[in-house]
Image (cartoon, rainbow, N blue to C red):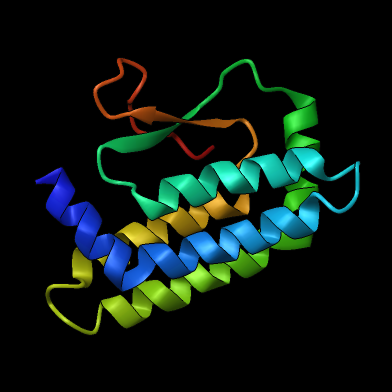
Length: 134
C-alpha cells in the first residue's frame, strides 16, 4: 500500500516539492555559513519525494544551535517552502481522492518551517512516535 501511496504522491505533489527543496538547498550551499541549511533541505527533498513509510522525529539532543538555525531557516527559505506546501495542500483537497495528500502537505508545512533538530526515520523505527510541536 505504501508503494501505491508514494506513486500517487510523487505524481500529484512530490516531484515539484522535491524540486523546490533541492533549489533551496542549492541556494543555501552557495555560502559556506548556510551549508547546514542546504543539507537539511536536501534531506527533506528526499523525504517529500517518497514520504509514505517514513516519518519525522525530533532529536532530543538538539539544543540552542538548532533553535537559532531554525529561526534563520524560517527567514531564508522555510516560510516560502511552507507556503508552497499549503498551496499544494489546498489544491489537492479540491478532490476527495486528494484530501489525504492535501492533509499530508499541511503537516509537511510545519516541518518546512523548522527542519533542524528533526530526523527522517522509517515508520517501523521505534523512535517513530508522533512529533510533539512544542
